[in-house]
Picture (cartoon, rainbow, N blue to C red):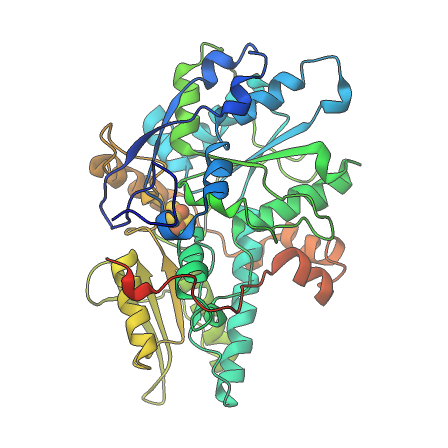
Length: 454
Ligand code: SF4
């Protein structure tokens, strides 16, 4: 179904397994730019997956701005950095999502740590100054989600309708909730910023201050598993701390970056991945406790069990319900279920959740909502076949690789604790709010979700 609001020829209706459209990534504005030495590399086409925020949710202007986030955008900055006019030079920082790394590891036939070093070496050979890992940003996002859930649970017990809390780290789901579902649902969205948004704050605020740079002197690129993150970069409230600079300037999918590597004839040495802390380098890749995502459900469940009921939960036990993408975990106390959490992945499960929520027949306190069936490893910006379908064999391999990455509880990160103390002034509420939280419009839906075909 084609949307009457949408003027983009590449948009197509969402479904869990839908056609992808081949889109020319060329930006007319960039076409006019002088062609630099990287032009050959950048002159590539990308498969634009039918992201969850297309059709009804995206305006023509947003469509243009999304299509401008491509390799040429990066090469444009790289080429400006080689010109004499230093006023146009930028410090280039690239932050890579952990859910992208199994894709590179599988495609390059390397361990995840070696794959991340290969990526870092390639990007630095192009002229990128810093390559970061977004896991530290996910630490903050999970910790803030945990605190918010406990607060909402307590308010709920006092009679306020603060539950269920729905996660908000997936931009495909959030865009849909904001633009299609509107105010009946958006109050349920967790206000903790997503890892991508928090990485924007860390790079354009904390890191910029450390380097004596203004946020505008940094060009910040995210490498992630899906196209929806390009839309997320357009969110107006993605400010870096008190600055108004955009936290993320460009998003490249893992597939786009791999294509750049494959088309490159540059010989690059592997290079260590940077941290936000001076000369300190990342030693090994770590992840959070989720099968194919940052594991919000498991982390919030354990925290809530301890904080609210004094229970230590070593391992969260899941029960598969309608399908493998709809699971639940419960905590019982004195024969009563006191915590009932769910994971709902893919829009069919999300639709079912929304229908039950509207009928007040949804018994969950917390739901980890992800737009992609299978979670973030299955994002449409990686592991696709040439005809745009999911590469199932590759995805199975990536799931195995992801499972082998050591998981780190966010509470154990000394850097995160230091940043709460120093960057956020001892977790000062206004600072925490500006850097780590967002808000959602309290308006009604832009379109009726009843018109949506699923
Ligand atoms: S679930 Fe899919 S759309 Fe959502 S953040 Fe993960 S990869 Fe992107």
